[in-house]
Amino acid sequence: MVITSKKDYPLSKNFPYYLEHLQTSYCGLVRVDTRMLCLKNLKKLDLSHNHIKKLPATIGDLTHLQELNLNDNHLESFSVALCQSTLQKSLRSLDLSKNKIKILPVQFCQLQELTDLKLDDNELICFPFKIGQLTNLRFLSAARNKLPFLPSEFRNLSLEYLDLFGNTFEQPKVLPVIKLQTPLTLLESSARTILYNRIPYGSHIIPFHLCKDLDTAKTCVCGRFCLSCFIQGITTMNLHSVAHTVVLVDNMGGTEAPVISYFCSLSCYVNSCDMLK
Picture 1 (cartoon, rainbow, N blue to C red):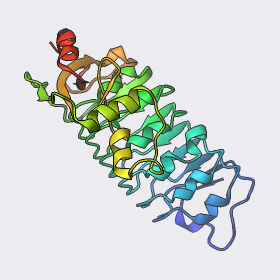
Picture 2: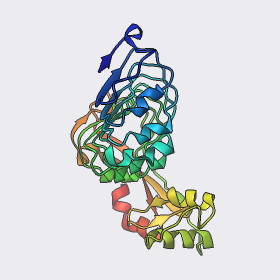
Picture 3: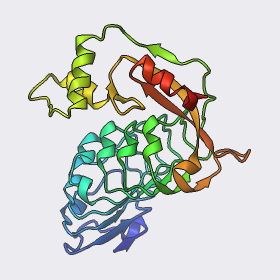
C-alpha cells in the first residue's frame, strides 16, 4: 500500500492486516500511527518525508520488518530499546537520512543483519565505536555530517559502497594523548579481565554504571580492552581499504580519513608506531 498525501491517509479505518509493504510519505505525520504496529506481516515500512520526532519502542515488535525508511523527518535519536529488539534479527536496510541525529548508541551495532545504512544529512559527531561489529554491512552513506574522525573498529568493515563526503574531518595530531596508569587501578584491571575472558555481566550482577563502563570499553589495536587507561592516537586511513567504491571525501579528490586508535599499554603503542606515521 502506497499513500503519498494527507487527503489519502485513512483516518477512520484500519490498514489491511495482511500488509507486507506500507509507504506513508508526505502525510504530515508527527508520530508513528499505532495501527501500523499491529501489522505483524510487515516487511517494509516507509515513513519518509514526514515530521516524526520520536520512534516508539514497539516498532521492535514487527518481527518480520526488513526495511525501515525514515528519511526526511525530525528524529534526534535512535533508541537503545529498538537496537535491542527483534530488529536485531530482521532489519536489513535502514534509512535515517535528513534528520537531526547527533549520536547513535553503542547498542546500535547489535543490529548485525544490516546490509544498507543511510545517515546522510544529519548532525552526527561520531559513529558508534563498535561499528566494526556490523559484519554484514555493505552500503554505508553518511555524507554531510559533522564527523571529526572515524572509530578504530571502522577498519573491520568490508563494504561495497562508502560515502563520507562533506564531513568536518580533522587533521591527525602529531602527539598522542597518554592516559596510562601504573599500576592499573582495580577497576581497570577487573574490567579488562571480564572483557578479555568474555565473562557474562549485567545490571542484575553489578551496578548499572559499571555495566555502562564495560559496554563502552575501548578496543586496543592488539585486540585487548581498556577502560580509562590507554594511549590515544589518530592516523589516516585510505577508505579503499574497507570499501570497493568510495565517494571522494572532499572537493580535492581525497579518499583518506582520520581514524582514532587506542593502545592498552606503552608496548602496544611502540609496536604500532609505524601505523601512526
